[in-house]
Image (cartoon, rainbow, N blue to C red):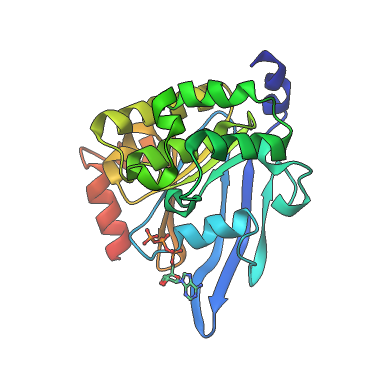
Length: 245
Ligand SMILES: Nc1ncnc2c1ncn2[C@@H]1O[C@H](COP(=O)(O)OP(=O)(O)OP(=O)(O)O)[C@@H](O)[C@H]1O
């Protein structure tokens, strides 16, 4: 853990600048600019179809931007020498290979990243998947277990940043609480967390900063405390008034 700190202190972050994506005549991400900073959890909030996943896919190079750029630790994702060692990504827990066991999934990733195999057991413990679960095929996992495996995969390379798309999907209340604590301690340890969600309350409980997107455009940005500072309004009230406008 200690060996990673200098790298984190150097300013590990995710920077999105004027990112735009058109599909034919439709603009689904429109001039999006924000930054997820080290030591902080940044909540990326928006309704279904707002453009969160497309933005995250552009950050990790899975979707080519029409214009604009996204940098991870100052480099494009595809230029990172070993991306999983710098940023752990979970985009779609349902997209994992159904025929592999949890352990096989992680062992393959560990080999690809050049991570020692013992790290597989460490991350299994971190996400609370026991040995019996690790021996099961992913196809037999619940969505919650797939999310845990996806988070384990994201943590495997001991990255300095995490980018997770709707990681709370399928987790039960105690799982959501566990994840919140995990993300909080990752950020408290100097890591950068970018977390998308449409679960307003969930984001309010864990995030330091918020980026709110509606119909592809950023409609609000700032510290969570600033959003709720103006009186007793909950983040939910603020969110609906902003996105409705
Ligand atoms: N490959 C694609 N071709 C055409 N349109 C697309 C494609 N991918 C996404 N879209 C459209 O882009 C818009 C934004 O989708 P996106 O998945 O980024 O939203 P989201 O905020 O992540 O929503 P959700 O929470 O439902 O996943 C949607 O209208 C979607 O239909």
